[in-house]
Image (cartoon, rainbow, N blue to C red; front, side, top):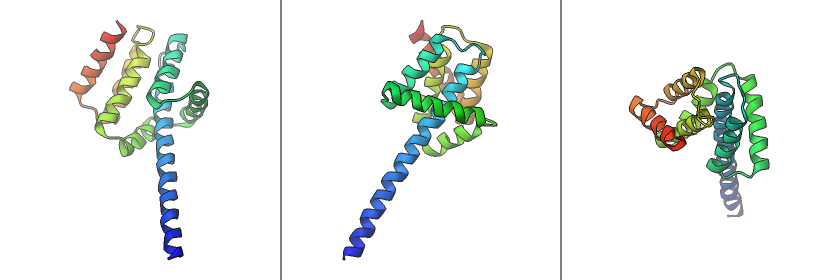
Length: 151
């Protein structure tokens, strides 16, 4: 009896650890895509960098120090990545379709934070949208929603 109780507790702990690791991986992949968005126009400006911190903090409920650590890790991951596929594959495996739309919205918010949409930024968000299997109508709807909100 004690052995089965120990097994049950062990399984619950392993499940919690798996869930925590999965949540961190989703945060890291999302942050890496947002880092790539900030870098897309070759002009790392204050507005987009501020939006990166604000959007990650708000979306994931992070304190500033947690956002800083996440972004530092995401920058390292983005630097080492050969493509966006490793990030989008993880998100495709982990997120529901509606959650993928939220990631796309975060990308648009960062891209439009400076109220200037560079062609490289638009290309990146389109590519990520395609890799996340976001439909064209949803893509356009989210873009217009963010554009209306940013004025």
